[in-house]
Length: 322
Figure 1 (cartoon, rainbow, N blue to C red):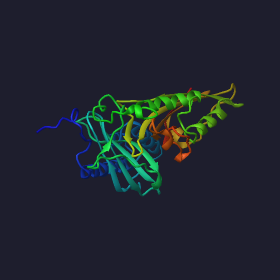
Figure 2 (cartoon, helix red, strand yellow):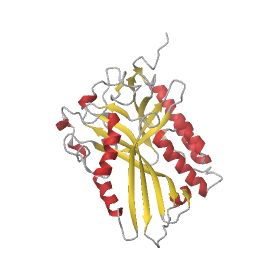
Figure 3 (tube, rainbow, N blue to C red):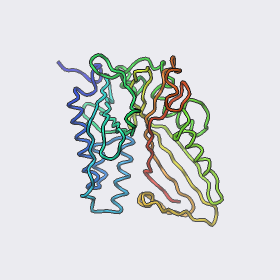
């Protein structure tokens, strides 16, 4: 009997053994890319925001070490715990909660498969302390529940109760970039990715030597699908991407300077009076349930009903001088 993954509600990956193989293939490919410093190898094992960050990393390192880095200390991800949702349609995804040889955090790697003829690739990475990894909702067989509104192809197999969440998963990215632009709305809890980031930007808006303009844009499927898993408390963890452009223009008579090695390696154009940075951010947030927001708000610094950032990674991917 043929099971059609685009229609049948089935586990996104058939077994934890298969998920473990995907994780091994990823770490092998990741290490190969960083040893050879070849951006094309990044695309074999990564997609979305993670691929943009990886390509920029490899390009910046290759500018300094054109011959590659054969002595690169390999990434090891072990002690893996897999959260696999049952779903229909594409993209399909699952989460590997792993231990890393890089630090003391748990590394949550979100693997995405865009179609039946496509390979699994890592699309999101979140670094969490062991005690802050959310408890995902699972059924009697151990399969998780994907959050509704994560893309046009997935709703048939996702939880259909998006109205129970304070913010629909596919609306989180837009709500966040709107907040960065205006500062309005109380949907996001205060913290480094929200109030503190806006305060830091305000300091750079106008200085004696330069002024700064910001453009923030949310991203969505197919290239950057927001992905969500329901949690035991009725909320959801949402993984999403945003792009951030920062144009810094110096006053007349002052020429911009670039001292950061990564920026130098990625810089294009003729740097005379303005420099535009392009960054990508990948975030994991906890969205509380709408009906029982009081039970899900505070724990991490937010008021009841607020969306709390679990982790946010932002990285420079391009720089252009003018």
